[in-house]
Amino acid sequence: MTKSSDTLVHDPKGGVPRLREIMRRLRDPETGCPWDIEQDFASIAPYTIEEAYEVADAIERQDWRDLEGELGDLLLQTVYHAQIGEEAGHFTFDTVANAISDKMVVRHPHVFGAESRDKSADQQIRDWERIKATERAVKSEGGTLDGVAVGLPALMRAVKLQKRAARVGFDWPSTDEVVDKIVEEARELVEARDRLSHAEMAEEFGDLLFVIANLARHLKIDPEDALRAANAKFIRRFEGVEAKLGASGKRPEQSDLAEMDALWDAVKADEQKLSD
Image 1 (cartoon, helix red, strand yellow):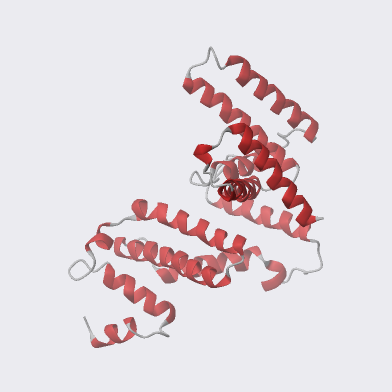
Image 2 (image 1 turned 45 degrees about the vertical axis):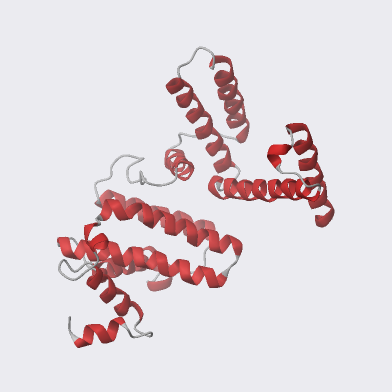
């Protein structure tokens, strides 16, 4: 390796060029890291998704020091994929950066072009969707549902599919019909559970989740955010139950459902007092 490469790698203020050089060195087939050399797009993709969620978690916790680190981890994923792409002759880090820059300029004519900024956020969203539709047409994505990424979290993808269908009029007119469908799907699942195979029950349960995602869309609720918040609330309250049990020298496995349910209600009551 050249002296200039070593200097850049060890420069604490080297920024993105330093990170790219580190990745290039890690992927060097003769002197790099054996693990890094073996990776490809598919093997790295799960880490990319995980890092994006860790960014979201740091934001949720408002831990800005942690967010700095998590954003670095996510940036590493982009550099990693770009390095693999460059080695294969598909693209480079610069072409990736230029592509997203071009897209942002095209999608914001009210900032970078001649269009007026004097319009509502809703109008800007409609304009954004119109521009995206034009982009899909150029890509020959003729179907209404074409281009909705398969790798998205299932609830998020369900909402995106439903939004696409709604644009062409395939949608319930109000939440009343959605709620009726949820009741219907839940009843069918419960009534048929003793005669359905596991695969059939999973399909029916999937239908129920899909309609629940539809209700979230009608209520303008992000189901992923709502479920994350529900998970956090469950953790907080169950830890409260464990704390109350611990105060009496017990652990959950030494308790029973009736006692823990009563403690759960007590934890909820404590939270209510704090919020009043």
